Amino acid sequence: MNEQIVILDFGSQYTQVIARRIRECNVYSTILRYDTPAAEIARLKPKGLILSGGPSSVYAEDAPMADKAIFKLGIPVLGICYGLQLLAHFLGGKVERGQKREYGKGMLMIRDTTCPLFKKLPAALQVWNSHGDKLTKLPNGFKPVAVTENSDYAAIENRARHFYGLQFHPEVVHTPKGREIITNFVHDICGCGKNWTMHNYVEFAVKEIRDLVGKEKVILGLSGGVDSSVAAALIHEAIGDQLTCIFVNNGLLRANEADTVRKVFGRHFHIKLQYEESTRLFLSKLKGITDPERKRKIIGKTFIDVFQAATKRAGAAKFLAQGTLYPDVIESVPIAGNPAAMIKSHHNVGGLPKSMKFELLEPLKCLFKDEVRLLGLELGLPKEIVYRQPFPGPGLAVRILGEVTPKRCEILRNADSIVVEEMKSSELYYKIWQSFAVLLPVRSVGVMGDERTYEYTIAIRAVESQDGMTADWVKLPYDILEKLSSRIINEVKGVNRCVFDITSKPPGTIEWE
Ligand code: XMP
Picture 1 (cartoon, rainbow, N blue to C red):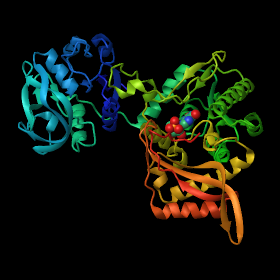
Picture 2 (cartoon, protein in one colour):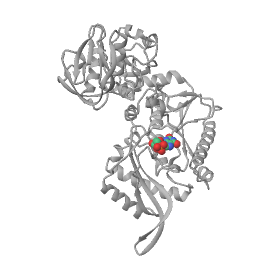
Picture 3 (cartoon, rainbow, N blue to C red):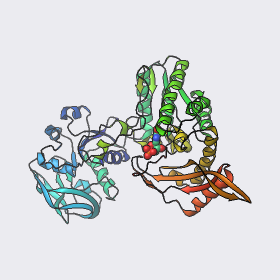
Picture 4 (cartoon, rainbow, N blue to C red):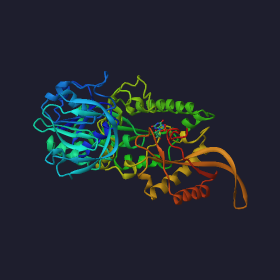
């Protein structure tokens, strides 16, 4: 990964989107805090620098400022929104509060079509704006290249120094030609090639893993989810049998889950798989427990106990591998108004006890989720694993309200596999974030044939989301809902009513718990 673009993050909600757009151009990108010293940036030898947007005003007392020396690195700079204002602020321009906030769609009129940012683009473009402040005086050596209705300086350049500024957001989908603008910046202006591909990454990562691990052993907790599966396949590619995967069957898995993992990893990839059958242990610990937090705690603790014992049996290993992704390691900018700074997932906190003395191996920690999926395909993992929906660690226990019993697990597993099957056959499964069944252990009256029934209810949940933090319920087509309801009630013994959850997050959560 020798060629890269560095993005300085001033707290925009779109910073990660910028990084992804650049990577979609097959160029590697790294996000750094806004105040990273120029010398530190120089060590990475980036081919260009992007200054992100952000919620602050450059003239505010506590505005996030960059190291001024970034403009002396001798590399191209692109300022986006707040980034443009910052660039102007440092280089002799002036930024003031605008009369009118410019928000939403606008038309950009390109006045100088020779500007390399707009190469091969039409003279009028739809763009997305979101700013209150306005550039009122150009920085030294700059000239305007494009305007909008509200701004004479919607795009500016100092072509000799390769400095550019955009008042609008090229990274968002509401700027339909934004990708081309970013492409022009990274390839034409910064001169990057197209080296960032998952094919190249496998080669790079395999070498890194081999160098780090040497002849030592590695242990990985395989959940069957996308991240741990791809990490397993990648590490196995690098070090083969030095890797042992531990798979814990906690009895709270979906139908066929354990079999699929054994088939794919054991039989197909020939990965050393240590299968821990712990269904009875987990279910006995959950007996009589109805409080959702207690259920979670018991599952978490039991998992650690089982995993710890399993690692001992697996033999001495120096490394513990984890499928940590880039969004988990990007340091969020502590600026009021930055949504990423406020929310960090409450899940997966805690982790393994300190007494487990491993060094961490995290071969996915510079990848975004969509890249991890591509990497999975590159490594030969089946679509069924690479494109699976997220499944919570405590599994079916957070989808059975109240006490978790073997009988209830069976009912939910049967209902859930109908939901998965129907969603997959309509292809909707791959288009949305999650779709699943929830068991409500309240009984209601029904009739089946001539018989009166008194059985449980299944709720169907389908949500659309980017990251699980917020979610919208999906308007599933009536014919799918009809099929789900009739199949679940006819085929799953113990269920006589089916409802559809129309709650978004917030105020609801995705899981019912
Ligand atoms: P909630 O229910 O909090 O879920 O809206 C947000 C996302 O997180 C998943 N989830 C979990 N994932 N361990 C996990 O690995 C957990 O304990 C857990 N609880 C919820 C949930 O499926 C959704 O995608």
